[in-house]
Length: 314
Image 1 (cartoon, one colour):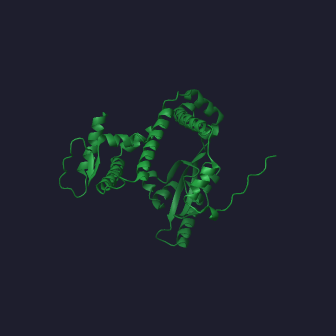
Image 2: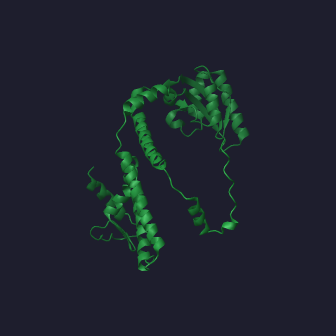
Image 3: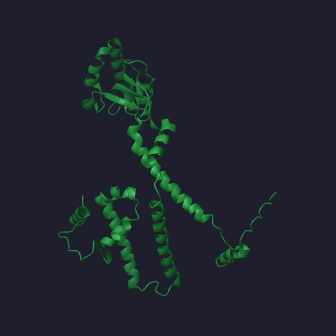
């Protein structure tokens, strides 16, 4: 979709859904949003969006509520700044002027760092992904899974003891004639999902069900085996093992793109850290006397705990 169409959707959502507004007021030319003295221009919005990592921009800009939040934050800053200017705040305050200069320096430095990282040559992510896949097969293992059918006697509208007695009566019938199980599930299971799935759960993975149910399901050894009564917070279950699925490693083709993206992210992070480390490793000239003098501007040096001398080097 072209950028102007995306902006049209955002504008429509923003101005047509304002709570309590009978009629949307027209915006001044070149203005995206206003509130009080706060103003946001499209250029200011673009500048804010440019600070969002490229991989996250699409998620942010496709959600009108998140766009509204971004605009609200910019507006609040604009309102605060407008009030400050009205009160002529900070005009003769050298510290505030210096803080503004340092804030601009921080933004400039961050923008340069992102440029430095993003303009670094790409690595061979395809080869890196293939190597990672071969060296880390466990990362791509799909664990054992089971297909099961269960009958639930709920304790929601009966006591736990009543639920247990009723479940025991069903278990007796099943033990007498296991072929009746599917019919008993349809007639008596109180799991709300039974109407849609007939009590069947397919390819259940470890960690996806409540623990007692999971433990019982994965303890069954042979297809057609039934559990004893299994108590969970929902009531009592009778579980039948329908099928087992062994572990397997996902084919490389299914995970290649995901690994390549991860390798690209790690590569950019290495570039970032290598550059920052190189800067930080340059000779640093820090005067201990100046540090102590600076501390003395804020505290009485006589009240400070003396530092222990560094240990002698062998």
